[in-house]
Amino acid sequence: MNLGAQTEQRGDTGAASAAATARGGADAWWAPIERAVAERVLASAGSPPLTLVLPSGQEVRHGAAPPIARMRVADAGTLLALLGPSAELRFGDAYADGRIAIEGDLQGLLDAVFRAPRSGWMTRLGTCWRWLRRRSNSLGRSRANVHHHYDLGNDFYALWLDREMVYTCAYFPTAEASLEEAQVAKMEHVGRKLRLRPGEMVLEAGCGWGALALHLARHHGVRVRACNVSVAQLEWARERARREGLAQRVEFVEEDYRSLTGRCDAFVSVGMLEHVGPEHYADLRRVIDRTLAPDGRGLLHSIGRNRPIEFGPFVARRIFPGAYPPTLREMVGLLEPADLSVLDVENLRLHYARTLEHWLARFEAHRDDIAKQLGERFVRMWHLYLAGSVAGFRTGTLQLFQVLFARGRSNTIPWTREDLYRRSPAP
Image 1: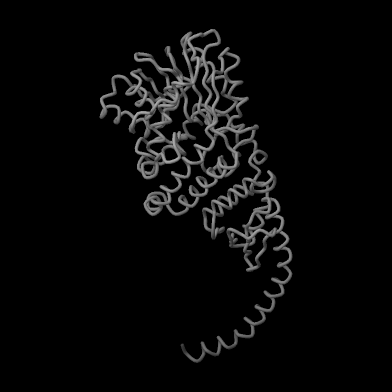
Image 2 (image 1 turned 30 degrees about the vertical axis):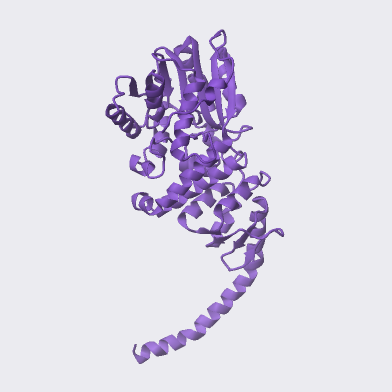
């Protein structure tokens, strides 16, 4: 460094000092406003056991309970966005971007927020952006929505799902059951509820990677026609059917559920109703009504709510576009106009919480591999989605309904539930 530069640097010292003084004055002016915004953010979130660390370094928390986490907010714009009409989406995006960081027990914090009274920025699950659900799941939009979520890559899902590649709620017959055991038990539970008999025909609407269709064919001796609009999932399912010698008994077709035709003894949909939307429940009902035999049975398995509330904007925009979790009344209402009688209703909410706990643990175990495939931002976004889903099912914000039904005049219905609880086949 030459002397001229040193002199110039010394000359800047006074200017830097003046700038610091000015900035200090600005900080003094902004500090109480920043703190007031933080107070409102915490209050609207239900005053969780959280220390909020502000851009200025101030720390704010509510209540006497010791904090279980610290949330650092990188800048004033991010803080202010947490009070806006799209605050939940902005929180999720800021967390994914790293502008919000959670230090400590993220899962415990989310559980606490979900248990809090339903108001404010973290709990506007049913009042923010209602138009999101109103965007009809047309044939074209449904395909785009499926592509957004389910076509992220089979290799990605294989890292953290069970070996059967089942991406729906498992059924844990014992507290010690592994995820693999619980997913096989779920598929068997569905098959037994349908009281399938060898040689019967099953229609499956929305088949994922094909595990349920293959399980029913192998263990219950039925034929299955299963539809999906995800090309990647269908390729996986067809290859597995060929490999396991079941291609003659299980047909995987690239069709929207609205296109299903033929006759079936059992109609089953596991994890698809969430993607239908209330505007199209009549379409699904017509499919069931035109395909189900006079003595046929059916089962709908869906994430749901206790009252009509859409998914929040973060999930609706970033994770599951077009999705809506029906209430039990809406599920039953779907069946009533076709004179379909409800035979059994089961809520597997806590089973889904445990399923998600397994998924989240496996997701985190492969965090580096997933980041290499899809990026660090994606990893943070999906971690938040999975942890938030755990909290939703733990706290009763979300439900998991299985509804068994049959034709209203059918008498070939079970007398008891005894046969549902026989020993399940080994995974």
